[in-house]
Image 1 (cartoon, rainbow, N blue to C red):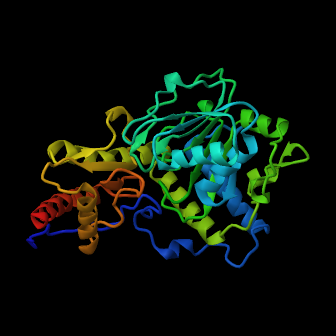
Image 2 (image 1 turned 135 degrees about the vertical axis):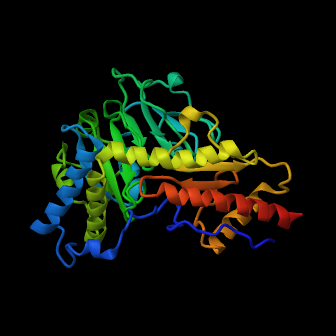
Image 3 (image 1 turned 180 degrees about the vertical axis):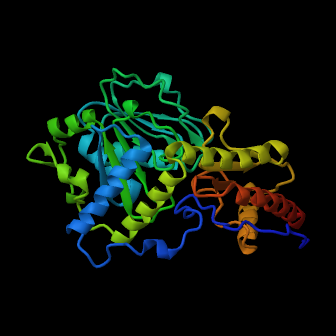
Amino acid sequence: MTDKHPATRPANPRFSSGPCAKIPHYNLEMLADAALGRSHRAAVGKDKLKAAIETTRDILGVPADYKIGIVPASDTGAVEMALWSMLGARKATMLAWESFGAGWVTDVVKQLKIDAEVKTADYGQIVDFADVDFNTDVVFTWNGTTSGVRVPNGDKIPADREGLTICDATSAAFAQDLPWDKLDVTTFSWQKVMGGEGAHGMLILSPRAVERLESYTPAWPLPKIFRMTKGGKLNEGIFRGETINTPSMLAVEDYLVALDWGKKIGGLPALMKRADTNAKVIWDFCDEHDWIDNLAEDPATRSNTSVCLKFTDDRIKDTAVFAKAVAKKLADYNAAYDIGAYRDAPAGLRIWCGATVEAADLEKLTLWLKWAFEACIAEQE
Protein backbone atom coordinates (compact mmCIF):
# COMPACT_ATOMS: atom_id res chain seq x y z
CA MET A 1 0.00 0.00 0.00
CA THR A 2 1.26 3.44 -0.81
CA ASP A 3 1.79 5.86 2.07
CA LYS A 4 1.43 8.89 -0.21
CA HIS A 5 -1.65 10.04 1.59
CA PRO A 6 -2.93 13.63 1.48
CA ALA A 7 -0.64 16.16 3.14
CA THR A 8 -3.25 17.70 5.47
CA ARG A 9 -5.93 16.16 7.62
CA PRO A 10 -9.28 17.66 8.65
CA ALA A 11 -8.70 19.92 11.65
CA ASN A 12 -11.60 18.09 13.31
CA PRO A 13 -11.98 14.52 12.00
CA ARG A 14 -15.15 13.91 14.03
CA PHE A 15 -17.82 13.05 11.48
CA SER A 16 -19.92 10.78 13.70
CA SER A 17 -23.69 10.89 13.24
CA GLY A 18 -24.27 10.95 16.97
CA PRO A 19 -22.91 12.15 19.27
CA CYS A 20 -21.88 14.72 16.69
CA ALA A 21 -19.05 17.24 16.50
CA LYS A 22 -19.10 20.06 19.03
CA ILE A 23 -19.55 23.64 17.90
CA PRO A 24 -16.51 25.29 16.24
CA HIS A 25 -13.78 26.44 18.65
CA TYR A 26 -15.39 24.53 21.50
CA ASN A 27 -13.59 24.28 24.82
CA LEU A 28 -14.61 23.23 28.31
CA GLU A 29 -14.16 26.74 29.67
CA MET A 30 -17.40 27.60 27.87
CA LEU A 31 -19.18 25.55 30.56
CA ALA A 32 -17.84 27.59 33.47
CA ASP A 33 -21.31 28.96 34.28
CA ALA A 34 -22.87 25.51 34.69
CA ALA A 35 -25.05 25.13 37.79
CA LEU A 36 -23.01 22.24 39.14
CA GLY A 37 -23.89 20.95 42.58
CA ARG A 38 -27.16 22.87 42.49
CA SER A 39 -30.64 21.46 42.40
CA HIS A 40 -32.42 21.61 39.08
CA ARG A 41 -35.44 22.69 41.15
CA ALA A 42 -33.62 25.69 42.60
CA ALA A 43 -34.10 29.04 40.89
CA VAL A 44 -30.77 28.82 39.09
CA GLY A 45 -31.58 25.36 37.71
CA LYS A 46 -35.11 26.27 36.68
CA ASP A 47 -33.88 29.41 34.93
CA LYS A 48 -31.38 27.47 32.86
CA LEU A 49 -33.87 24.77 31.91
CA LYS A 50 -36.44 27.38 30.95
CA ALA A 51 -33.79 29.22 28.92
CA ALA A 52 -33.02 25.99 27.05
CA ILE A 53 -36.70 25.61 26.20
CA GLU A 54 -37.36 29.18 25.14
CA THR A 55 -34.13 29.58 23.16
CA THR A 56 -35.03 26.38 21.33
CA ARG A 57 -38.43 27.92 20.56
CA ASP A 58 -36.81 31.12 19.35
CA ILE A 59 -34.29 29.51 16.99
CA LEU A 60 -36.64 26.87 15.57
CA GLY A 61 -39.60 29.23 15.27
CA VAL A 62 -41.88 26.98 17.30
CA PRO A 63 -45.34 28.59 17.67
CA ALA A 64 -46.10 30.20 21.01
CA ASP A 65 -49.02 27.85 21.70
CA TYR A 66 -46.86 24.71 21.25
CA LYS A 67 -45.41 23.11 24.38
CA ILE A 68 -41.70 22.26 24.61
CA GLY A 69 -40.38 19.88 27.24
CA ILE A 70 -37.01 18.41 28.22
CA VAL A 71 -37.50 14.69 28.81
CA PRO A 72 -35.44 11.63 29.78
CA ALA A 73 -33.62 9.16 27.55
CA SER A 74 -32.71 11.27 24.54
CA ASP A 75 -34.81 11.25 21.36
CA THR A 76 -35.78 7.64 22.03
CA GLY A 77 -37.37 8.60 25.33
CA ALA A 78 -39.24 11.49 23.73
CA VAL A 79 -40.65 9.27 20.97
CA GLU A 80 -41.63 6.53 23.41
CA MET A 81 -43.44 9.05 25.62
CA ALA A 82 -45.56 10.08 22.65
CA LEU A 83 -46.25 6.54 21.43
CA TRP A 84 -47.23 5.16 24.81
CA SER A 85 -49.25 8.21 25.89
CA MET A 86 -51.16 9.10 22.72
CA LEU A 87 -51.56 6.10 20.44
CA GLY A 88 -54.53 3.77 20.64
CA ALA A 89 -57.25 6.39 20.35
CA ARG A 90 -57.62 5.62 16.64
CA LYS A 91 -55.90 3.50 14.02
CA ALA A 92 -52.24 4.27 13.40
CA THR A 93 -50.10 4.33 10.27
CA MET A 94 -46.43 3.58 10.73
CA LEU A 95 -43.97 4.82 8.09
CA ALA A 96 -40.47 3.36 7.99
CA TRP A 97 -37.58 3.66 5.56
CA GLU A 98 -34.64 3.12 7.91
CA SER A 99 -33.74 1.39 11.16
CA PHE A 100 -35.12 3.89 13.68
CA GLY A 101 -38.47 4.11 11.94
CA ALA A 102 -38.50 0.31 11.90
CA GLY A 103 -37.91 0.39 15.64
CA TRP A 104 -41.02 2.49 16.19
CA VAL A 105 -42.97 -0.04 14.11
CA THR A 106 -41.81 -2.80 16.45
CA ASP A 107 -42.86 -0.83 19.54
CA VAL A 108 -46.32 -0.03 18.21
CA VAL A 109 -47.18 -3.33 16.52
CA LYS A 110 -45.46 -5.87 18.78
CA GLN A 111 -45.35 -4.13 22.16
CA LEU A 112 -48.42 -1.89 22.28
CA LYS A 113 -50.26 -4.14 19.80
CA ILE A 114 -52.12 -1.20 18.27
CA ASP A 115 -54.19 -1.55 15.11
CA ALA A 116 -51.73 -0.11 12.60
CA GLU A 117 -50.98 -0.13 8.92
CA VAL A 118 -47.27 -0.35 8.18
CA LYS A 119 -45.82 1.30 5.07
CA THR A 120 -42.15 0.81 4.30
CA ALA A 121 -39.57 1.80 1.71
CA ASP A 122 -36.10 0.45 1.08
CA TYR A 123 -32.99 2.26 2.28
CA GLY A 124 -32.37 5.21 -0.02
CA GLN A 125 -36.08 5.64 -0.76
CA ILE A 126 -39.01 7.16 1.10
CA VAL A 127 -42.70 6.36 1.52
CA ASP A 128 -45.02 8.40 -0.72
CA PHE A 129 -46.98 10.63 1.65
CA ALA A 130 -49.73 11.00 -0.96
CA ASP A 131 -50.71 7.39 -0.17
CA VAL A 132 -50.94 7.94 3.58
CA ASP A 133 -54.25 8.27 5.42
CA PHE A 134 -53.73 11.22 7.74
CA ASN A 135 -57.05 10.59 9.44
CA THR A 136 -55.07 7.93 11.28
CA ASP A 137 -52.26 8.75 13.69
CA VAL A 138 -49.12 8.79 11.55
CA VAL A 139 -45.65 8.07 12.97
CA PHE A 140 -42.53 8.76 10.91
CA THR A 141 -38.95 10.02 10.94
CA TRP A 142 -38.40 13.33 9.18
CA ASN A 143 -34.76 12.61 8.43
CA GLY A 144 -33.54 9.03 8.15
CA THR A 145 -30.30 9.17 10.13
CA THR A 146 -29.28 5.69 8.98
CA SER A 147 -30.48 5.94 5.37
CA GLY A 148 -29.62 9.50 4.36
CA VAL A 149 -33.11 10.39 3.15
CA ARG A 150 -35.49 13.04 4.41
CA VAL A 151 -39.03 14.24 3.89
CA PRO A 152 -38.58 17.10 1.38
CA ASN A 153 -41.46 19.17 2.80
CA GLY A 154 -44.81 18.88 4.55
CA ASP A 155 -46.95 19.70 1.52
CA LYS A 156 -48.66 16.29 1.43
CA ILE A 157 -49.70 16.45 5.09
CA PRO A 158 -53.23 17.90 5.10
CA ALA A 159 -54.09 20.79 7.39
CA ASP A 160 -57.53 19.27 8.07
CA ARG A 161 -56.19 15.87 9.16
CA GLU A 162 -58.08 14.09 11.92
CA GLY A 163 -55.15 12.06 13.23
CA LEU A 164 -51.97 13.21 14.92
CA THR A 165 -48.61 13.38 13.18
CA ILE A 166 -45.81 12.10 15.42
CA CYS A 167 -42.44 13.03 13.94
CA ASP A 168 -39.01 11.84 15.03
CA ALA A 169 -36.92 14.79 13.84
CA THR A 170 -33.72 14.14 15.73
CA SER A 171 -31.27 14.62 12.84
CA ALA A 172 -33.41 17.28 11.16
CA ALA A 173 -34.02 19.86 13.90
CA PHE A 174 -31.76 22.92 13.44
CA ALA A 175 -30.74 21.84 9.91
CA GLN A 176 -34.04 21.54 8.05
CA ASP A 177 -37.17 23.69 7.87
CA LEU A 178 -39.81 21.82 9.87
CA PRO A 179 -43.43 22.83 9.07
CA TRP A 180 -44.84 23.19 12.56
CA ASP A 181 -48.45 23.47 11.39
CA LYS A 182 -48.13 19.95 9.94
CA LEU A 183 -46.48 18.39 13.02
CA ASP A 184 -48.35 17.56 16.22
CA VAL A 185 -45.56 15.81 18.10
CA THR A 186 -41.93 16.51 17.26
CA THR A 187 -38.92 14.99 18.99
CA PHE A 188 -35.16 15.42 18.81
CA SER A 189 -32.03 15.22 20.94
CA TRP A 190 -29.28 17.68 21.72
CA GLN A 191 -26.41 15.56 20.45
CA LYS A 192 -27.23 15.83 16.75
CA VAL A 193 -27.17 19.12 14.82
CA MET A 194 -26.18 21.22 17.84
CA GLY A 195 -23.46 18.81 18.97
CA GLY A 196 -24.81 18.69 22.53
CA GLU A 197 -24.36 15.95 25.09
CA GLY A 198 -26.46 12.77 25.21
CA ALA A 199 -29.27 11.51 27.47
CA HIS A 200 -31.74 14.40 27.10
CA GLY A 201 -34.64 14.53 24.66
CA MET A 202 -36.90 17.33 23.47
CA LEU A 203 -40.63 16.86 23.07
CA ILE A 204 -42.71 19.48 21.23
CA LEU A 205 -46.51 19.25 21.35
CA SER A 206 -49.10 21.08 19.25
CA PRO A 207 -52.45 22.09 20.79
CA ARG A 208 -53.96 19.05 19.05
CA ALA A 209 -51.48 16.78 20.80
CA VAL A 210 -52.28 18.38 24.16
CA GLU A 211 -55.98 17.82 23.49
CA ARG A 212 -55.30 14.14 22.87
CA LEU A 213 -53.40 13.82 26.13
CA GLU A 214 -56.23 15.45 28.08
CA SER A 215 -59.05 13.52 26.41
CA TYR A 216 -57.61 10.02 26.06
CA THR A 217 -56.33 7.49 28.58
CA PRO A 218 -54.42 4.50 27.17
CA ALA A 219 -55.54 0.99 28.09
CA TRP A 220 -52.07 0.08 29.36
CA PRO A 221 -50.22 1.36 32.45
CA LEU A 222 -47.74 4.18 31.89
CA PRO A 223 -44.30 4.24 33.56
CA LYS A 224 -43.66 7.37 35.62
CA ILE A 225 -41.21 8.84 33.11
CA PHE A 226 -43.90 8.68 30.37
CA ARG A 227 -46.65 10.45 32.28
CA MET A 228 -47.46 13.93 31.00
CA THR A 229 -50.81 14.54 32.71
CA LYS A 230 -52.10 14.98 36.24
CA GLY A 231 -55.78 14.61 36.99
CA GLY A 232 -56.60 14.54 33.30
CA LYS A 233 -54.79 17.80 32.54
CA LEU A 234 -51.39 18.44 31.00
CA ASN A 235 -48.61 18.65 33.56
CA GLU A 236 -47.55 22.16 32.58
CA GLY A 237 -44.48 22.01 34.79
CA ILE A 238 -42.74 19.62 32.41
CA PHE A 239 -42.97 22.30 29.73
CA ARG A 240 -41.53 24.99 31.98
CA GLY A 241 -38.37 23.00 32.72
CA GLU A 242 -39.64 21.04 35.73
CA THR A 243 -38.23 17.80 34.39
CA ILE A 244 -39.65 14.38 35.25
CA ASN A 245 -36.25 13.14 36.39
CA THR A 246 -32.97 14.84 37.32
CA PRO A 247 -31.23 16.39 34.31
CA SER A 248 -27.49 16.91 34.00
CA MET A 249 -26.92 20.61 34.54
CA LEU A 250 -23.56 20.20 32.83
CA ALA A 251 -25.30 18.86 29.71
CA VAL A 252 -27.88 21.65 29.96
CA GLU A 253 -25.09 24.24 30.02
CA ASP A 254 -23.48 22.58 27.02
CA TYR A 255 -26.77 22.83 25.10
CA LEU A 256 -27.18 26.48 26.10
CA VAL A 257 -23.68 27.24 24.78
CA ALA A 258 -24.55 25.58 21.47
CA LEU A 259 -27.84 27.47 21.25
CA ASP A 260 -26.04 30.75 21.92
CA TRP A 261 -23.59 29.97 19.11
CA GLY A 262 -26.52 29.19 16.81
CA LYS A 263 -28.14 32.53 17.56
CA LYS A 264 -24.89 34.45 17.09
CA ILE A 265 -24.21 33.05 13.63
CA GLY A 266 -27.71 33.95 12.40
CA GLY A 267 -30.18 31.42 13.81
CA LEU A 268 -31.96 28.74 11.84
CA PRO A 269 -31.25 30.14 8.33
CA ALA A 270 -27.52 30.16 9.06
CA LEU A 271 -27.58 26.68 10.61
CA MET A 272 -29.46 25.31 7.61
CA LYS A 273 -27.06 27.00 5.20
CA ARG A 274 -24.06 25.47 6.95
CA ALA A 275 -25.57 21.99 6.70
CA ASP A 276 -26.50 22.53 3.04
CA THR A 277 -23.00 23.75 2.21
CA ASN A 278 -21.43 20.81 4.02
CA ALA A 279 -23.61 18.21 2.34
CA LYS A 280 -22.91 19.71 -1.09
CA VAL A 281 -19.20 19.05 -0.61
CA ILE A 282 -19.92 15.32 -0.38
CA TRP A 283 -22.60 15.34 -3.09
CA ASP A 284 -20.24 17.07 -5.51
CA PHE A 285 -17.52 14.56 -4.68
CA CYS A 286 -19.90 11.72 -5.56
CA ASP A 287 -20.81 13.41 -8.84
CA GLU A 288 -17.12 13.62 -9.74
CA HIS A 289 -16.28 9.97 -9.03
CA ASP A 290 -17.94 6.90 -10.53
CA TRP A 291 -17.04 4.52 -7.67
CA ILE A 292 -19.17 6.14 -4.97
CA ASP A 293 -22.73 7.42 -4.89
CA ASN A 294 -25.40 8.83 -2.59
CA LEU A 295 -27.60 6.14 -1.04
CA ALA A 296 -30.61 8.46 -1.43
CA GLU A 297 -31.94 7.82 -4.92
CA ASP A 298 -33.93 11.03 -5.40
CA PRO A 299 -31.93 14.27 -4.96
CA ALA A 300 -35.05 15.92 -3.52
CA THR A 301 -34.97 13.56 -0.55
CA ARG A 302 -31.24 13.68 0.18
CA SER A 303 -30.41 14.45 3.79
CA ASN A 304 -28.16 17.44 4.40
CA THR A 305 -27.04 16.06 7.76
CA SER A 306 -26.56 12.28 7.69
CA VAL A 307 -25.15 11.77 4.22
CA CYS A 308 -25.09 8.04 3.45
CA LEU A 309 -22.91 6.69 0.65
CA LYS A 310 -22.54 3.42 -1.22
CA PHE A 311 -19.60 2.01 -3.18
CA THR A 312 -20.40 1.18 -6.81
CA ASP A 313 -17.08 -0.06 -8.22
CA ASP A 314 -17.25 -3.52 -9.85
CA ARG A 315 -13.77 -4.37 -8.58
CA ILE A 316 -15.00 -4.52 -4.98
CA LYS A 317 -15.23 -8.19 -4.00
CA ASP A 318 -17.17 -7.82 -0.74
CA THR A 319 -18.84 -4.46 -0.19
CA ALA A 320 -19.28 -4.88 3.57
CA VAL A 321 -15.66 -5.88 4.12
CA PHE A 322 -14.45 -3.13 1.80
CA ALA A 323 -16.51 -0.39 3.45
CA LYS A 324 -15.24 -1.36 6.89
CA ALA A 325 -11.68 -1.36 5.62
CA VAL A 326 -12.04 2.16 4.22
CA ALA A 327 -13.59 3.47 7.44
CA LYS A 328 -10.89 1.81 9.55
CA LYS A 329 -8.07 3.15 7.41
CA LEU A 330 -9.40 6.69 7.72
CA ALA A 331 -9.70 6.31 11.49
CA ASP A 332 -6.21 4.79 11.79
CA TYR A 333 -4.77 7.82 10.00
CA ASN A 334 -6.86 10.22 12.13
CA ALA A 335 -8.56 11.52 9.01
CA ALA A 336 -12.15 10.60 9.89
CA TYR A 337 -13.74 8.92 12.88
CA ASP A 338 -16.93 6.83 13.02
CA ILE A 339 -18.06 7.07 9.40
CA GLY A 340 -19.05 3.47 8.79
CA ALA A 341 -22.66 2.83 7.80
CA TYR A 342 -25.12 2.03 10.59
CA ARG A 343 -25.16 -1.66 11.48
CA ASP A 344 -28.64 -2.27 10.00
CA ALA A 345 -28.07 -0.18 6.88
CA PRO A 346 -26.56 -1.24 3.55
CA ALA A 347 -22.76 -1.43 3.64
CA GLY A 348 -21.12 1.90 2.94
CA LEU A 349 -20.22 5.14 4.68
CA ARG A 350 -22.17 7.71 6.67
CA ILE A 351 -20.75 11.21 6.99
CA TRP A 352 -22.30 13.76 9.32
CA CYS A 353 -22.63 17.16 7.68
CA GLY A 354 -24.61 19.05 10.31
CA ALA A 355 -24.03 22.67 11.23
CA THR A 356 -21.20 22.09 13.71
CA VAL A 357 -19.00 20.57 10.99
CA GLU A 358 -16.73 22.83 8.92
CA ALA A 359 -16.90 22.64 5.12
CA ALA A 360 -13.10 22.96 4.95
CA ASP A 361 -12.76 19.75 6.94
CA LEU A 362 -15.12 17.96 4.57
CA GLU A 363 -13.09 19.19 1.59
CA LYS A 364 -9.99 17.65 3.14
CA LEU A 365 -11.94 14.48 3.94
CA THR A 366 -12.79 13.96 0.27
CA LEU A 367 -9.08 13.78 -0.56
CA TRP A 368 -8.63 11.14 2.10
CA LEU A 369 -11.67 9.23 0.87
CA LYS A 370 -10.15 8.99 -2.59
CA TRP A 371 -6.82 7.87 -1.16
CA ALA A 372 -8.39 5.26 1.16
CA PHE A 373 -10.54 3.89 -1.67
CA GLU A 374 -7.55 3.45 -3.98
CA ALA A 375 -5.46 1.93 -1.19
CA CYS A 376 -8.16 -0.59 -0.26
CA ILE A 377 -8.68 -1.53 -3.90
CA ALA A 378 -4.95 -2.22 -4.20
CA GLU A 379 -4.92 -4.27 -1.00
CA GLN A 380 -7.72 -6.61 -2.01
CA GLU A 381 -6.06 -7.54 -5.31
